[in-house]
Image (cartoon, rainbow, N blue to C red):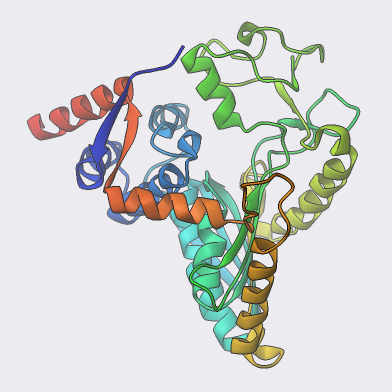
Length: 347
């Protein structure tokens, strides 16, 4: 069952959503990071990581899993930087990680930033895109509470593990790969639940491992997902399972700093590499652009279609969306934003 959509201009959306976040106690910097992340997701066509997260974010605050205005600390050890929080907002922590990574990699050629106790981070491509636009190779990986089963299993071991690689290019857009290891994202599951759509495939009941035939088996009474997601890849799922484990082991470096032990469920890493330390940085950007062109010029499997390189379609969607100056959101969310904004005015 499709839900009613309402188009809303970006400035209006920023004002009303910002008012809702301000009322919860978020700082101006936290609000800016959150709105930028949600708009990036919306313009990329990933509404499940956009403003649809507002009700979920409010629930996380109510349950004490996210504390608005919570401080983060920074510890530096050579090219390694660790950012630690205690139920801190992940969007602003990730922005800080990118800023630190750019500064460190510019000075020393490489940087490795680990983050713990900060949640959520949103689309990881937004961070590697920022690193690539700064002339750096960027890698970003994020862990969330375990929801994904390894190949051949029905119990959760991995997080959905959003991961992205970004490369600077001499062309108009960087090369950005952005994905996760689950057959379906948690956001898409909740979206299907809200809209009355069929239960996505490759979902299992967390209690007994049986394949979920209805949302009642995998959605808790408070409206959160408590099932298990199969690993991505379908007939190649064994490969994705190996990738998921490898990414998880790399991520666990974020658990080694002493300050990271407070929230072991939520951690991420951001790696930045300066190609100029290997030789001519402009020549490397040309090499990236030549690969983009080679992918575009590859013979298409189906007539009338053109092959796209990683991140190209998402970039084009964002360009069109920003030109339009707004997005479509669910009517129910629109009403909630209007009410939150009105309440803020009355206060």
